[in-house]
Image (cartoon, rainbow, N blue to C red; front, side, top):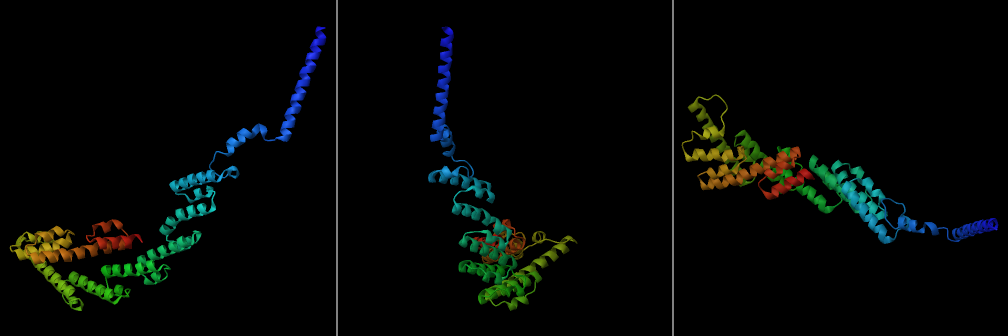
Length: 328
C-alpha cells in the first residue's frame, strides 16, 4: 500500500514538472522578451556614453546625452571627442569650433577647408590672411580677404603701423593713403635726423610742427653731448659718459632741462619730464617723449611678436594697435 502511494506521488510530481515546462515554453513562444523585459528596459532607458543603445532612446534622452558629450569635448579640447555626439549638425559644430582656433594658430590656410560651416570657413581663411599680411606687411594679402570689414581693418591697421614703425622711406611705399604716407616719411626723417644728430634731414619733413620738433630734438641732443664733454673734462673720465652723469655738473636750469628731456626717452620714464623747470619745455617733453616711447615699443613688439611689450606703451589707442598687430 505504501509502495503504491509512493509511486503515485512520484508520477504526480513528474506530471506537474512536465506541465510547468510546457507552460514556460508556451509563454516564451508567445512573449519572447517576457523574462528579460525588465533588464532590457533598464539598460535602454539609461543614456550611456557612445552610440549603443541609442536606437531605444527618446529625443529628450538623446538631447541629454548630446549635451553631456558636447561638454566633455569642450573640456578636453580634443576634436575626436565630438565623434560621439549623436546629432550630426551638433557634431559638425563641435568639430568646427574646436578646430577653428588651432587652425588659426597654425596659419595653414588650406586646413580651413575641414570646417563644415561656410561662414566660419571663410572667416578662418580671412583671419589667417590678416595675420600673414601684418607679418609680411604686404597689402596684397589684405586684398585677398573676402570680408570687406576685415579687409579695411587689415589695410588701415597695416598703414598706421607702418607709419609709426618704418625705418626707411622704402617702408612707407607700402602705404596707399597719401596723408598716412607723408606722415610715415616725416617720421622716418625725424628718427634718422635725431639719431644722426643732424638737422639736415629735418628740412625734408613736410609737417611744420614735426620739422620744428626735429630741429629742437637735434639741438637738445647736441647740447647734451656738450654737457657730456664738459663732464669728461671736469672729471678726467675716459670712459663713456651717460646723460645721468653729465647732469651732475650742470650749473644752469637750461642745462638740466635739456638733459632731463633726453633722459625721459633714454630711460623710457616720463618722470624726468617733471624735473624740467621750463613749463613749456616740460609739456613738449611729455608730448614728444610719449610719442617716441610708444613708437619704440610698438616697433619692438611688432618685430619680435612680443605682446608683453605692448603694455609698456603709454597711449591706450597705440597700445590697442600694438596688440592687434602682434596677435592678428
